[in-house]
Amino acid sequence: MQERRYYGLDALRGGMMLLGIVLHAANLYLAAPPPVVPLPTDPNKSLAFDLVFHFIHAFRMPTFFVLAGFFAALLVEKRGIYGTWRDRSVRIVLPLVASVILILPVTVLLLADFALATRFGTHRLLPDPAELEILRAELAAAGFPADAPAALHLWFLLYLTYFYLLLPLCRGLGQFAGRCAKPVLWFLGSPVSILVLGVLSAVTLWPFHGGQVLEGFIFFEPHLPSLAYYGLFFVLGYLLRQFPGALQVLARSAGRNAVFAAVLFPLALWASQVDHAVHPTAGELNHLVAVAANGLCTWAMVALAIGSAVRFFDRPSPWALYASQSAYWVYLVHLPLVALAGWWLVQYDLPAVAKFTAVVVFTTLLSFLSYHYWVQGTRIGVFLHGRRFRLAWPWREAR
Image 1 (cartoon, rainbow, N blue to C red):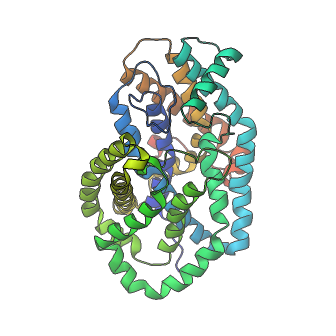
Image 2 (cartoon, one colour; image 1 turned 90 degrees about the horizontal axis):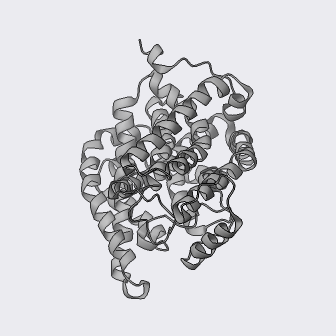
Image 3 (cartoon, rainbow, N blue to C red; image 1 turned 90 degrees about the vertical axis):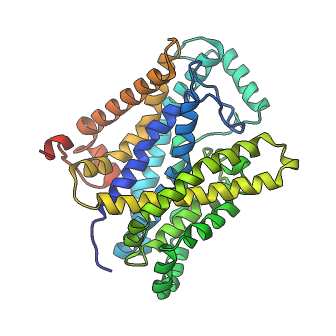
């Protein structure tokens, strides 16, 4: 297969990682947190951020894992499976270990500070042990595994490590599937694809309350339902690479998938809320509707995101290049910055939208400034990307 640069997919991959800032900032101001995630939120809150949170969560990480599988296939073509494993060990596993040591403790501290500030109205950098124990007991009583070691936002690196172990299986499936190029391209261009892929994901969503993957995956202990759910996207992303023309088919189908997503997202959100409200032993039909609606919605949104990226952004762009190159660093450091800003703002009685905006602006500025001046072109940049970059600010390149 001819090697080329996938500018649109690069931009989309960077965008999905950067959306983490918006998602985690919105999480601080939820008015109705899901029952399975009973975490404290700021006293100033708004249902608008529940909508933002659920919208981004519905497609962001599934899209990322499809792209991760696609780019893994490119790497296997270039370096083979063992070469890919060596490369990913350096680019994924080592940054994961370094981040667990250097970034995770600070993130845990600041998130604990935020939680205690919202619960007790205190504002200490070093948490009071008695307050911390009360909060832990309350979370445990609500069913949240407060004592389990959490990877927090680093979970996606951990899951990528697991999924790269599937490369021999992926290559075998790809060699078999490559013989069926014509029917597969027809399938991707047909509305039937959303139905079939949605049903596949619905099966993996069955163990989750509300048909939403909101529990279990942020911890170091492997969570098999989450691995099955996200692993499906990775494997199918790998297989997508085996069909030349598949991306163009998705680009042509973007309009139709936008209609599907617009219809399915509110339906999935409503079905999840109904499922959460019904006792588990009395709501199998409600749960079936919730997992089906969420499976269909997610695939419509994933197909829309990929198709739109190929259709509108598959060309060289200084903005897309900068976003794709900086996204790894920005994602690693964004959550402690979000928690720091959120914790500081708890003490002020301001509208939720003002706090949310301040958190996003603060986190975005510090993340990109630190990348621009302290990461790219340094040993840290080489550690993350394998090479040095000397990128100018994109607005200068665009002139």
